[in-house]
Length: 267
Image (cartoon, rainbow, N blue to C red; front, side, top):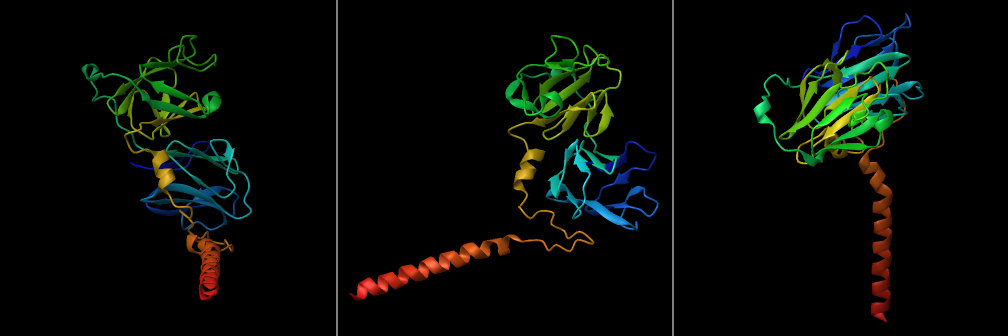
């Protein structure tokens, strides 16, 4: 994840770089929401970053934490481009991306139906748009990804597969497109990148033969990110503790089988 950082979208504040480790989100004494290890105040949540990925942990009893408008009770995996809401403050996860300037028109290749944009927000949530051929995003009736908003351009952008990446070209939109939380005109998308049109229509690029954020999510263990929250009195339940009942049951069954063997064998 290149240049990963938190950006405050609804108030003037410096961006917070997200390096490997734990980043606390607190309510300071003045009532403002801040991010930082040295800040004093009530712990609301924390963002954990390590080689396995990126995730959010919510403090016990805390309500009002959302990711892309969906409530989070305890923990959720994050990806660049996600919008985290904490008590009315929006924190946008931003990350670097590859520029499309290096791509030449002569590099165009064939589409592939296995490469898809999977909807994770807006009216396309749960639907997938394949890139077997170039796709147009816009308000026009013939657009492949149609955004029915009078302020949205009829031809907003064009998406085209280039090898294992997708070329995003702006077609004259007013505000451009967000890729991993960054406003862009043109970009070269990789597997796992998050693309947002018109602030609410979210898609994640899925390329079956390339690593993606979704694969990283499935690779995380059940207790991933269970770094104890400061002020959190509930102990984390580890995988080894959860296995104890099954081990005990297996031992009981084995003892019963041996007893039966000895009993009937002696007879």
